[in-house]
Image (tube, rainbow, N blue to C red; front, side, top):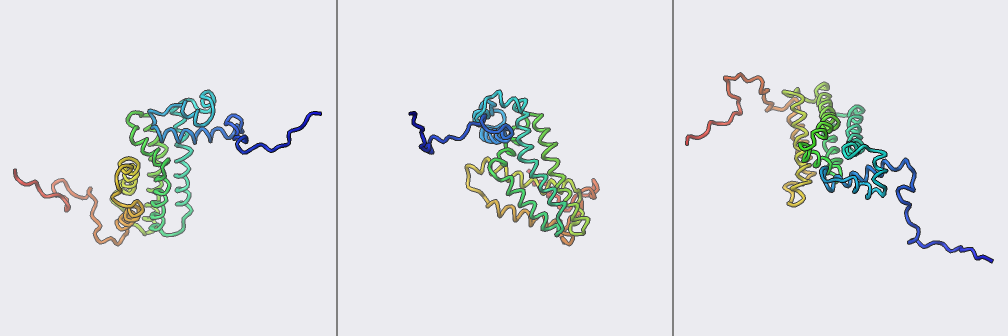
Length: 248
């Protein structure tokens, strides 16, 4: 009589199913996660679809069933990782009922908390570092990431102005750039030079001081509110103009 094996397989023999054995609907997410890791580790130019497929545990042919090529895959990664964050901030601002001061401080801290993470920050560094070599990627990032982010912050500042909590800046778009530019510079620094050198200032302190400075300049009771640069006539030097150079 044939003996039936009733022994329980050891943990070592209970292997995780391969990617192609798992449900088909899981594959896009697995491919995007693998692509994110490869893009951050290698950069856009050096990233290869073979590496993405190998990391995801699928064939390169399977990858092409979902994405037309590397550019299409990279755009999908950005849309899956960064765009939902921007949408969350937009929704948070639209639903907020508290003061614009606290809202702006929270958004700046929240933005840093999200984008300072290794993979999110790595994507930002990749785009800013390689965009000039890939114009289509640069345009994509500008249209789907930079401009929507700008609009979210701009709307927040406009909210404060409409509620009488912020003064009208010289130019709303310029003010928005001034608010976000230091954060982006700090982010890229941390993911490049900051990987090799001791930080000049703790990131949490940097964000806190930056938010305090921005809010101080936006408050309507700011005593030192400077006039707009556009109000100066060409013949009249600005009040904060630099002194003439010393004679040689």
